[in-house]
Picture 1: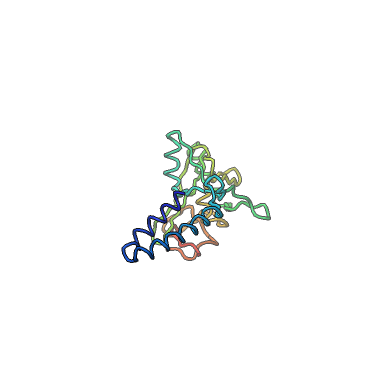
Picture 2: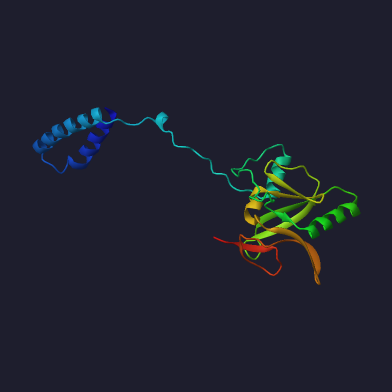
Length: 201
C-alpha cells in the first residue's frame, strides 16, 4: 500500500494542476485500480534472497608494508592462491648455479644463514622494479621458498606473479656484480639497469 500511495502522490503532484478536475478524478480511479493490480501480482524479492557472491576488494600491498603490519601482530591475507610448480616440477623462479654459489659464499663469509628475498614493487623507469635483500626473517604465509644447493630464495606470491618463469642469476660485469632477475617471460621491455621492466598486457 505504501508503494501505491507513493506513486499516487507523485502522479498527483505532477499532473493535478494541468488537468481538469473531472478528468483527473476519472484518471485517478483508473490509476488506482491498475496500481492495486500491479501491487497484488508483482513479487518484490527480499534482500535475504539475494545470493550473489560478495567479494571484498583487496588492495595489493607492497611486501615491505605487509611485513610492517605483520610485525604489529596483524595478518594480511590475499586472494592469491598457492603458487604451483610447472609440469616438469621446476620452481617457478629458477635459481642458477652461479646465484646459489654466490649466496652460499656470502653466508659462509658472514657465518650466517640468510635467504635472499626478491621483491617487485611499482616504480623505476619502466613501471616495476626488482629489489633484493638478505634476510633471516621467517616466511610469511604468502611466501614461496626456492632452494638450490643449500641456497635459499624467498619471493612472495604477488611479486612472483610478475616474474614467474624468470631466472635469478648472479651476473659479473665490468661495472660491478649483482644478483639479477633475467629472462622474464612476462616483461615487455626493461631498462639498462636491469632492475626495472614493463609487463606485457
